[in-house]
Length: 197
Ligand SMILES: Nc1nc2c(c(=O)[nH]1)N[C@H]1C(S)=C(S)[C@@H](COP(=O)(O)O)O[C@H]1N2
Ligand SMILES: [Mo]
Image 1 (cartoon, rainbow, N blue to C red):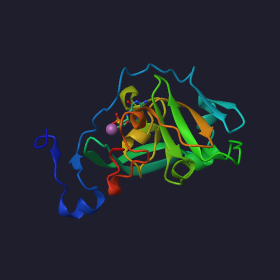
Image 2: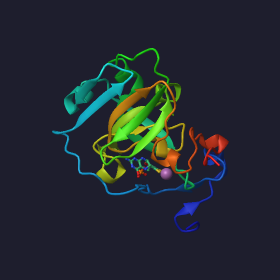
Image 3: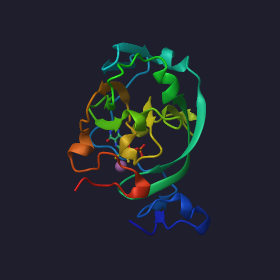
């Protein structure tokens, strides 16, 4: 694999590539299971657990402030892609519409298709985390999580749930899909938090 599609970073980029990662110019698709077929007319997003339960439709999300983001993307299988251009909604703006129980300390992301991944509330509610519906100026393709995914740029990309459709707020840590299957609870690429063993 390394050679044709993956390359070592140029010196001027090397300070942006975490240890053990290789750059790719393409954008590989990494999905466990089938790609769900989600229509924006039927799209719903829910919060529950330690928050007042609430549902958002697609138009509710589009009514929030929209921003462009250019962020690096690091998959734990060792590919990184620099400067991915997205458009979407800041998690901080979304969270201003959520009535959170002060006891909440953790959050589980839920998705169409059943994937889950966990974060602490502090890792989730950050200025540079966002819900993305646009990639390179085009509607986010289904294989990359369209119509809507989360992007958490400072952690390995398995923490960026594709086809996200809900958040479950918790007062303790629970493990999501890959975390139950040996991946790290936090997943910070500069610290190489790849596995839990
Ligand atoms: N719902 C869902 N989200 C997911 C995954 C998945 O299998 N299902 N894979 C994760 C992993 S391991 C990575 S590296 C990124 C890959 O995103 P991409 O396919 O857009 O490159 O999505 C993450 N989000
Ligand atoms: Mo990944």
